[in-house]
View 1: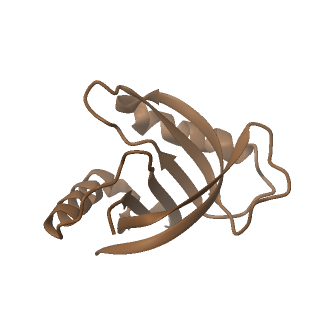
View 2: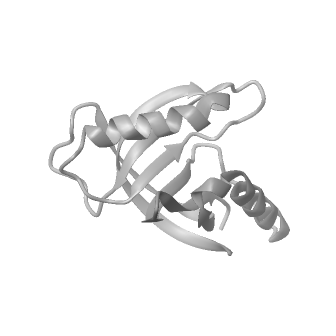
Length: 145
């Protein structure tokens, strides 16, 4: 279920920010808004998160968009290109089980003796529709390799 992967993400995304406690509402709204601005692009939906550093860190930044194969020649207005490569602890599962997936992955990372490398890195989620409004999600947390 959990595994270590060394992965590169090339992302066209729109930058957003807001309180971490509101991400469950903010991220889906931002995703709909961002995807409407790029109807001619095809790719896997993705969210790239700035990790929460501590309890005093109440507002964060995140990007929503799509994964692409190559950097585009031009970008839609207000979009940015991110190229991110790291070693990650990764888990996949149903999108309606996000809390459980994160808990399982956190426990697995600790149990395997890895350390999270959140400083200067991003947590990444990719979304894969399967059927009847159900989607699979892959969660990537940066770790030491």
